[in-house]
Image 1 (cartoon, rainbow, N blue to C red):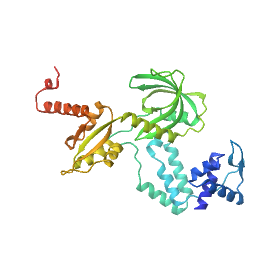
Image 2 (cartoon, one colour):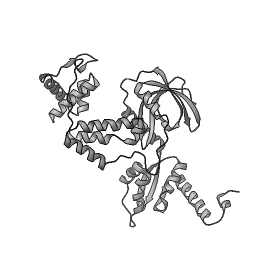
Image 3 (spheres, one colour):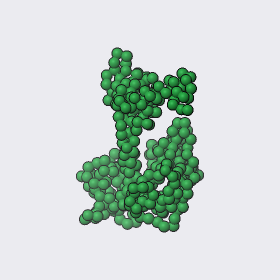
Image 4 (cartoon, rainbow, N blue to C red):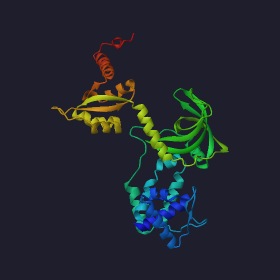
Length: 341
């Protein structure tokens, strides 16, 4: 295990440059004292690790030094083949490149590792889009990806719910979520009402909604320390909290308990974790995070007769009114029963 850790430490310094002992400890999931011992061990083995003191200090490799260790374990080789998702790679314009790289890697691997990698591809397939949803057309994805990679400004026309806007963006990263591509970028405020003109913020844009994209010759400086994965996690949590700002109290049948996580995902699973004890018929009470009342009514009706809304009272009345309209409609009373002329 220590040999693997020493190699990981060496590769971190090689790939990232100067890093402090606490940063290395966090990456390797060890104590700072262990990092000190490992650095000493690398030095004793002839690896030229330098320690720079001061606020901007840390450990680094002597300029020009690179390890020539290229060995991969069987498991590591298999994981590399599983990491290549053909659909997204093709969207990014890298489909042929990915195939070529995998062929080269398989040819360079020892016989046993190459066979394991081939078996992994035969036995595992990664399909990014969600069920019953075709992948969105993303004609500008390759251009946006190039701008992300080359750190170039993008001038774009973007379609929002309230109409189209023009944006000058500094693209920081791309995220594939549920088969949908998103661009994370900094933008100067020149569009939505209430935005301070010139105020730069990091925002998320759905790539399929770009109507025009121009990759400028002008570059930009990427914010120091920007962490795409951390931003996405925090942004997703904020979005979920903003959307699911209400709480519905439900009574669920045994079948309704199975349907809840299927219809509401993680929110449904969390609701079931706090469910009360079942009554004599197996029904339980839960509290479910929901969106606005208009959206919640439609969502809750998907549970059919396997759920009863107990509260809030306004939501219960809204669901009851929707059910009454449906009952009149299917009873054959005609469109006038819905209040229509």
